[in-house]
Length: 375
Image (cartoon, rainbow, N blue to C red; front, side):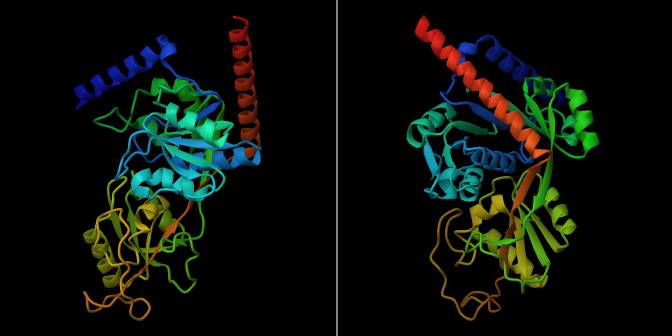
């Protein structure tokens, strides 16, 4: 495995160096691009950071658009899929992927577009929605598209990772030098040590927090206060143990954990197994992540008889909390999710830094345009 990791690391270096030497192969959008990415596979909190950035940009009077690859889509499509037009969500999670769907639901006023070709998605965002800035979700390795601000989300544990396939590193840590700023999950000491190790400044610290639980179906509704804090925890994300630990820290009595692979599309068998586990454990609630919830809301609370990711025929309900037919005890626990929010320490300082970088990017575009006209 170490030989494979060594080969992978060399290939990653060659790829980044090639784009550095052939800058003409990098395409540039008319409006500035802010990339949010990481150096490891999954589980760094990039998507909640993108949501936080979108809100900051909206508050500053910008019109951001989010460009995503749409990884893990059940029904991938060529071209550009407009997940949200800033007013409503237009496609289900099966067509958008879970992370773009989560962003589209959480961010009214922000168009979300999915495409393997993020340059094309950006052109659509500029022409159709008049966006003034792009947010490139998971963009650190997407070197085909030029960016004006490169933000790297990183934690202390990432520094000890090995390269793929024996570890989780997407490329050698030296690639972090390409970042314009670090967004660090951890303590102030962690932030200082990571910045020193990678020789990248400025560094801003991320502070995650969980909001009050929300129902999976109807999506986002407040969870009834009558639900007790005895739960079965379910997560189909890159690092499910972090979610399970966070639930206990939030005061939940987690009686069973169910972990699935990242971007997992839940089957009827999965849902029935989880339901039975909750009933057997006398748990009133099944708690999951917001990312999982967008893959579940068309299924939870309905007869679990269809294909993963597809809406199903509603069941014939008996008394509240029961389902007619099938299992004689038919009890259905409440399904809920905990929305993860990311705050950025010294948010005013961070917002000011972003404003300065965007202003510099726009001045550069103006000068480049004038130079082209003069030529």
